Image (tube, rainbow, N blue to C red; front, side, top):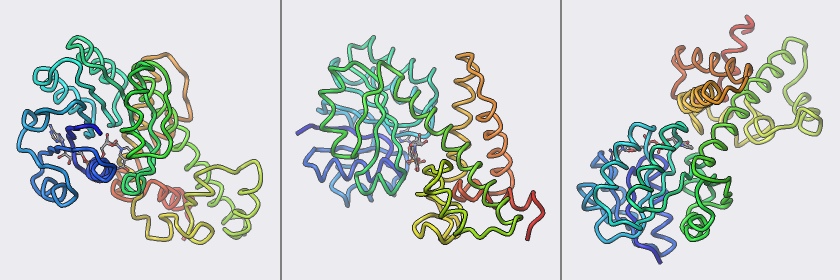
Length: 296
Ligand code: NAD
């Protein structure tokens, strides 16, 4: 079993660290928020009061932080602190450029590194059913696989350094676009006098079938577990969808890719957030579309 330092014990990192403990790993944890350290202690994580204390004697460090700037600042301190050969894994969703810089810092120190963003949300983090999208050397990936298996169900090696972040950004661009498409279809169906159930019954077995419809249906009823049945409580918040769509557009601009629907989705989620929905589930965008259509 591995001795792991876990930095960032928030909505995702907290339950992920707890699952590492459940799988028999020794975990030392750190977060800037003291109440999260208390919660982590209750789950068997050793709470630490600094980054240096967290990484004492560990052979692997995992970061789960809000954005690229946090990861770069923490990794800068990490490479100045850990012995070379310590495995560094970042599970945050961050921009490609920051991910590249983080890998470069690790490599300069002689530390193997992986970018390993996740999908599956807080539910997947708690249940240990996350999907990991991983970028980095095959040999490092192979060695680290048991660590990911303690926190997730699907562990996918996407390619070299930054390929995990690339996969995450592309996947979530599909998700943002498809949720808007499904929302538009339900709003149009309402205008045409079509019931939600009838549209669901047809589209879920026809060419309109997609995850946004059949797992995360944005109207209440057809998929009882979707956030639409729970007043659009996240789930996956509008603020996080906007963050990921912005990352996709930043990457598209740098790479010279044309993504007009991704750009439009980012624009619509920007408006959704500005209208006070940042804390609502992202599927609630259907309500904004309905209001724009002038329906009750
Ligand atoms: P969160 O804000 O709940 O957790 C981040 C934690 O990092 C916070 O507790 C914060 O105190 C801590 N932190 C920030 N700077 C730190 C530092 N220098 N040292 C130690 N701790 C520090 O966010 P989250 O929802 O857990 O998301 C984490 C990452 O996972 C983000 O990149 C997010 O985009 C990604 N993600 C989130 C979800 C989701 O559903 N929440 C799903 C997939 C991916």
